[in-house]
Length: 373
Image 1 (cartoon, rainbow, N blue to C red):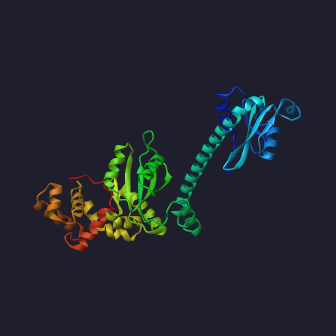
Image 2 (image 1 turned 90 degrees about the vertical axis):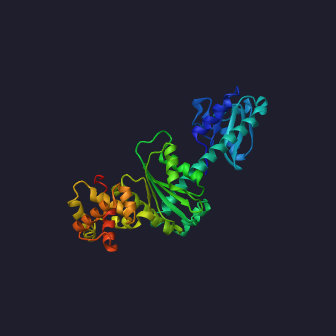
Image 3 (image 1 turned 180 degrees about the vertical axis):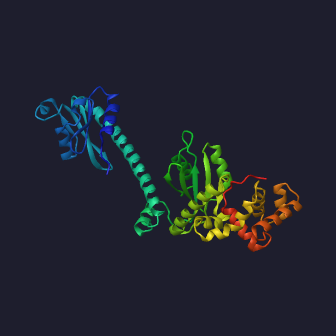
C-alpha cells in the first residue's frame, strides 16, 4: 500500500512554493507534517490536518479559529487522494478568502505527483517481483501451482516453449553496458523473454521459440552495440518449466566446457557439443581415463602438436579426407601418413567407427593447449 514519505512531500512543497507566495505543508495519514516551507514544523502534529482526516473534507481555518488549535496557522487544508483513498493532507498557509482560487489547482498538481510516484513504485515492485519469481521458477523446487499461477497473473506466460541462452560478459564493460542493460535490451526486442542474472558477468536469457534468432548475427549485433560478450551458450528447445530448468543446467555445463576446452569459441550450441559436454560434466570419473588413453598416447609423442591438430580437423570435417586436407593445407597423401601415425601411436584405427569415436571424444575433452601445425 502506497504511503507518503518525506522526500515526496517536500517535492510537492517545493514545486508549489516555486509559483505561490504562500507556505505549503504536506501531512501524512496521521496528521504528521512530512514536508513544509517552514523546516522547523517538519515532524510536528497538525491539528487542522487531523480534522481533514477525520471528516474527509476541506477544512478552512481563519485567524480566530487557528488560535484554538495546536500547531495550526490560518489557511486551507485539503484531502490528498490516491485511487479514491485518503492518504494525506495538503495545507496552504494564508487567508482562506485569498487561497480558494489556488487551492484546488495545487491539490490537483500534488495528486498528479503522488499518482506518478505510485506508478513508479508499482512498476519497480512488479519488476523486482518478476525477477524473484523467475529465479524461483528456474530453481529445482520452484514449480508449485501457487508460483505458476502468480507468474501467469504477472503476464510471464510460463506455458511458452523457450530456448535457454547463457551469456558470459567480460569484466570490463563500457558505460550503459551492464548485465541489467543487456537484459533490458533483449526483453524489449524479444517479447515474453525471461532474463535472470545470478552474477555481474552472467545472464540467462530464455527466448520463446516463436521468435526466430540467427545466433551469429545476434552476437555480431551485440558486438556492434558495444557489449563485451566472451561467450554465448545456446541450449535446446525446452518444453515446460521442468524442461527449462534442465536446459538451464545444460547451458551452464556447455559454457563451462567451452571456457575450459574451447577458449577461442564464442558461440557454443548444445546441438553440436551435447555428447562431449555430457562426458565433460563427469570428467573426474575414473571411467573416463580409459577413454582418454588412446589420445594421451598420441599427445605423448606429438612434440609440435601436429597430430593433435590433424585429429581436430579430422573430427571437424566428419572424417572427410579431402575437406580435412584442404583445411590443413596439406596433400591427401600427407594426411594419410598422419592418420597412419595416429593409428600406430594410439592403438586404435581412426578410419574405423569405434576408433574414430574414441579419438573424437578424447579430442572434445582435451583442452586446446597444443600449438597448430
